[in-house]
Image 1: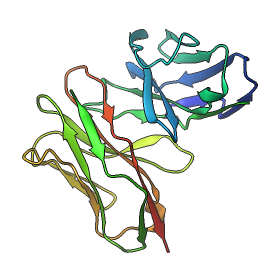
Image 2 (image 1 turned 120 degrees about the vertical axis):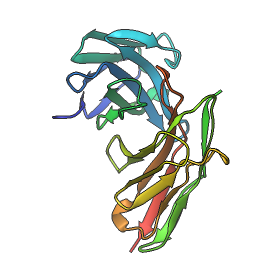
Image 3 (image 1 turned 45 degrees about the horizontal axis):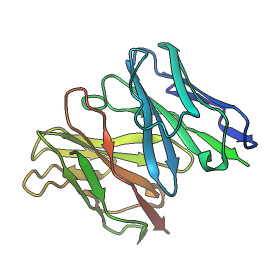
Length: 115
Length: 112
């Protein structure tokens, strides 16, 4: 089991550029979560999917953020255009269910820096 | 609503000291409770859990008991090591298909 795989590990971009973060969940997991972590706001849930369908995107900060899950083994989080305040570590996590009976498995995150 | 409150950090201890990180919760119904740990440069991972009142979760020398009467799930370890330095998150799952609710995290720093 390779775990949840995120890419890239680090991303540095200039303000106004498009950023795409990628996630490969653990095979067989039916839920996928995108989180953002900053010193100021801690860990924030942005959006989550069940069987590839977005269930709750109320945490997505603005229309500049979008997430897709075209199939069970791949998801993307896109920021267009990026701004310096988007700098954070973005985590993807997957699980059977919503984390009650079986745990969330997190990737190692993508550290995004927008200059 | 559902929420989790953790003690502010950082918690700074010397090696072999006793650790307590406080966690209290507010929830409707009967939630499951969790502690997740985040080591530097990594994502969160489950440390332990308890699914009903009076259950004790334990792992790697850490323990936490689900106390319904005080709505608490405090994390304890009898003798911390430098390798325990991390951020610890308390979380609850309200049940059904509701998502996990995380606390703000408590940073633990253990010095030799």
